Amino acid sequence: MSSKDTFGFGTKPCMKEVPAGAAAVFSFRGKPELVETDYGEKYSFPITLISHPSYPLLEDGTMEMLWQSKCQSAKQLFNGLNDKSYSLHKQLVDHYASTPWVLTRFDTGAYWLEIDREVVGNNIVAK
Image (cartoon, rainbow, N blue to C red):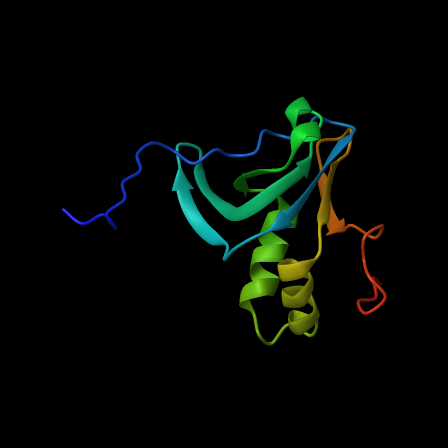
């Protein structure tokens, strides 16, 4: 057995649902996938969770986990990242890799995903 061998078992943590009327902030940290879950197909994104109302310990630092969802925001992001003919593909890929995002859940249950405009630098323009 080599000292380079590593093993891991179990399930990677998934972000809890954002409560209605609240928002979560996270950064993406890897390639998204379409995965099969107990609840059907979902879009799965590796994230670094920065803030979320259901995770009070984030005050001590960020957490790495997955955001898995069937929502339209996840579907549109996944499709935009994978469709090179999409008119804003390059800008989307750049923001996906470098900008924190805000996921807001409205009282109706609908989600809205957008870049965190408060942290967008001078070189990247949020439109």
